[in-house]
Image 1: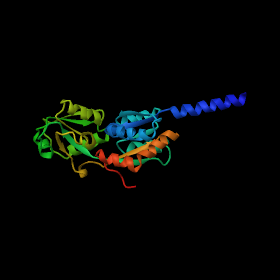
Image 2 (image 1 turned 90 degrees about the vertical axis):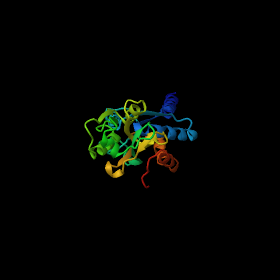
Image 3 (image 1 turned 30 degrees about the vertical axis):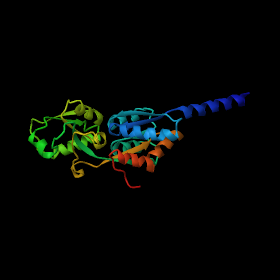
Image 4 (image 1 turned 180 degrees about the vertical axis):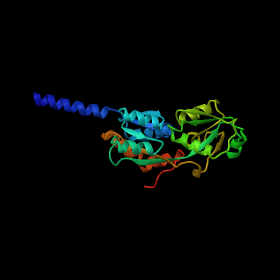
Length: 241
């Protein structure tokens, strides 16, 4: 009888583990591409549930340190995954580059000649930017602004993450903003892609946080040829294998 009870308990434990969702902490710039990847994965794995939490890289890293129950971390930089890895909060040997980000200055207005000349003339009085202390795309945008001689009339409004910076612009609260190219690719309006030499390389790294079978399987999928193709289609670069 005791053996049967132990066996039943083991079966229930395995079933509960299999039913547990894969929880992904994802930087705001990669939220939409991840939706596409989750849908693609779901075609072959209909029984697996992927739950995502979207925030700035800095905020997500803080939550992971505080014990948030994430299985994967998709950051917008390389620093936070490296720090978490060194602190023993990731699965050894799983940290890698999953995307190379591109910065864009975007406005929904048509016909704007976005670029250094327009900014230095002060024609854009309010520019949106993710918090440079929390968001790598914010730090990249600030690096570009630091190369320019902006007049005092140009003001910068900061969002917590690049998703909020995009919202400021799309809602009309700011006339233009520094966002991820992937967020505005094909969106129309006006666009400037600053030269990559003007800002630090946006090397977006990922880290497996829990070595559960379902989590590792999805993590490995994110490095597959099919996933890499979707990531490139979304406006990112991918690192050589």
